[in-house]
Length: 292
Image 1: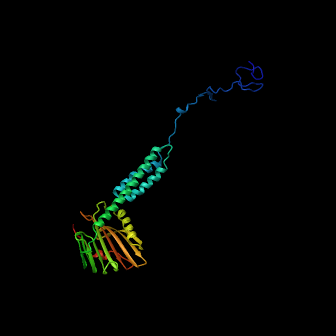
Image 2: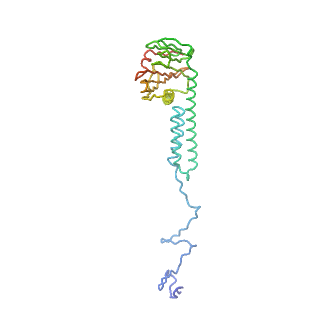
Image 3: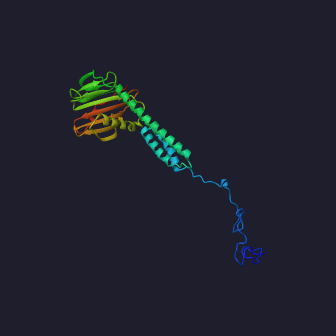
């Protein structure tokens, strides 16, 4: 046998020519690749190769858990927390891989959006119900007298002095002030009774607090909120917000009181005075609930 390149004699078992060094056995692209171990490795087609798909991400779990947890909280505690959980779900869904988990990403966005919409609707509904009930209990100014004693179907108490007193004929709402009119008074009390059975002892503070704060900001221009807290009034759960006005040197306290009953179960008490500090301790001292 002779070398095809230099025509030198070679042995059939040789891989390279001893004279010119040419490779006597060139690679055949169609043949199998011979490994150093002597085994044959065949190249697999693309469709036969295993593809590694990432596991469901932490963001997916967070998005779904935020929805279900937020839904439960919104139903039984406060829609404000449900709204917060909805935003957490939106943020978590944005981190889900669109390449590998597009369906999870879409579902996460949809669930979080539904939670946000339902929470906003719940907040709007509760606020409208509260305001509607307050409007229904507007005080009838025709039934006015000067008195130091208040006696309604829901409660009774005494003032420290005689005030102009207005009350509705059948409900438990009153307005009292020490001047000839409210505008020239240095002190006034306003109590509204409301029937709203969406309120309970669990969601009371989270539901009432934002409503009182909004009411003060809208109806008492120039007043700045200085404190807010959960407290008790005449043995019942309450939420109090205090605001001051440096311009008029006056203060106001608005306190929502949860009093479970078969009819009016929420009382909004507003007390304003020219003095720098106000509270409802004097009102509580003679306050007595009635069975109704």
